[in-house]
Image 1 (cartoon, rainbow, N blue to C red):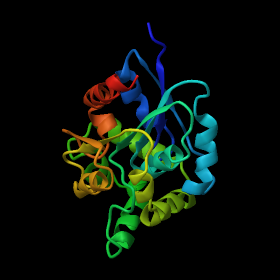
Image 2: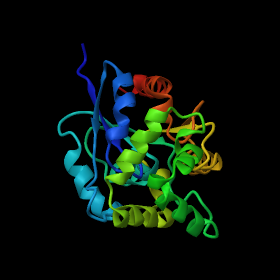
Image 3: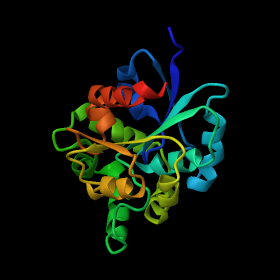
Length: 231
């Protein structure tokens, strides 16, 4: 039996890695999930987080990078460094540049900062209105462990990032997973990424923004299908 492929899971805005539990359990044999957590009390942007992610990558093994939402640009920037063994990049409800227009950026940024204290905003933008209460509570709990200055720095970087060149020149295949009911990242993002890199594969899941949490089995199946011919 082939050795399991390490699957590096880079988290969304909360940065804890805790919300990957359902998806990690769904991956099953063949893929070995490794959730990365970011410091909850130190404001770090993409540039400062890169060394942390680089240290966490497997050595001497083939591996996969999964960048959820906030971490998509980070996964792309690491891939651009051509780390040995990298098989693929998977972007989950993510983006290469700010998914909102400059005119809406202040409003969206303010709403993201209020997520931890607002069940309404979590349901609207992350879990879906029908999200299980336990998932909503998990999201709130994770966000509350992160300093407001840390969240502010991450939001600032989301609104100013530009990793389009990294998409265009990515040295490995890219899979883009899109939530069909995502109210945070628009559907046009997938089209923009595919225009930059025509080889990019996109798949829509019946889920809101937090698709790895709401549709872990479907997301894991999509990932396995994508990786099957690559290793």
